[in-house]
Amino acid sequence: MQPTHAASRHPLVGFLLGLCVMNGVTGIIFDARPGSIQAQLDTKMQIFWSLLLAGGAALALIGIWWRGSSIKLALELESLGMTCLAVAGIVYAGAIMLLALVSGMTSWGVILTFAMVCIARRQKIEGVLRPKEPKRGRRGRA
Image (cartoon, rainbow, N blue to C red):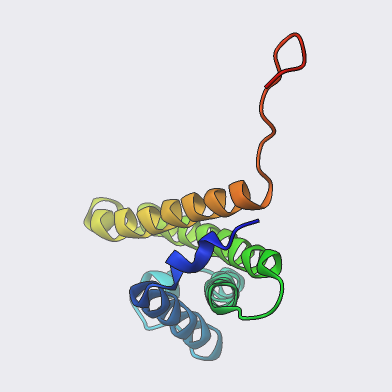
């Protein structure tokens, strides 16, 4: 298995994931701002979303910056983090779509795009971790 995940160490990736951690942690510790989309969610959904956001970003950061002996573990952590971030993005974009409708189109579009990028990154990691076997012909050749 080759260490292909080093490209994710771009400073902007770290910055964006760091913002996700901070936003998620503040969502866990503090009440949502009145009038915000988050404030319109039920308390359990707010906590769920905040945990997914903070936890997913933290796992992705650990996986990206892992210097341990197991590249597989690093990629598994990053993949799990990307999955959590994708779910958090879909949940939040869905809430904006339902609550803000057209006036929130830019916001839910950006957040949904973020979720899709997380899914794409996860798929890329899964392709490295679990490569597909080549199809064999009738005579057993690749």
